[in-house]
Length: 291
Image (cartoon, rainbow, N blue to C red):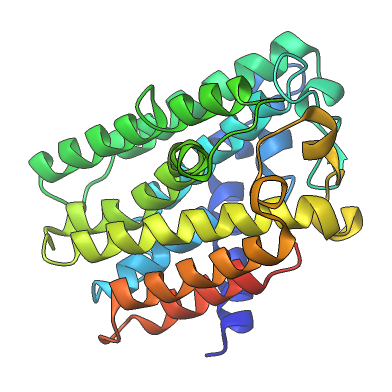
């Protein structure tokens, strides 16, 4: 199957999983679930749950084996976007082609909907049935660290602190290993933890490291030269805020070279074993994408 077909088919599956979830299905007007539903159904690439599915296939299991994990990482990602867009953070008014949560709802409700999505993700993780209890516990701990003060939160704090400051490239790498890469790595590694396939865990972790950095570099590039219609958000905002980005530090051409380097390293990490094809195609998508 061509990667475009796989992306479309897996995205359709993930959309259906979200629509079937109680959070979305039972949402009533003027409740926190309504605000959660709004952000969850706003679209997007669904790349993190797709990485869960691709990792699961790489481990020789049906791609829907860890549906709860796929939902959990998408819920966490959605929470992070809601909070990232707030006036106290990036103060964005457009996300995925529609008003951000704090524009569509009162700001307090937007904040609470993000909080609820984060906690709902761990409810999902706690209900995983098709794995050993000790492996579920390890997976929950891994995810908590990835999105907590040592991972995503640390990266966001560092990102805010770096505005209007000329960071060195190694420091910028640390920011994005946490802010962007930690959740990507979790999406890839957690299926290995749950299936007890520790031999492939390291390969998936290394792949996720390079995938996250390549993805962020391209994200920075698209904020300079991309299309707001394709991206579903405003462009040029990084420069306006004085954010530390790869194009700002090394220039557009060198940033593209760095993304290609991480593409190569990701493919080397994962090897050419059976099941690796989708992961190879996904890193190509991450680097070559226009949205």
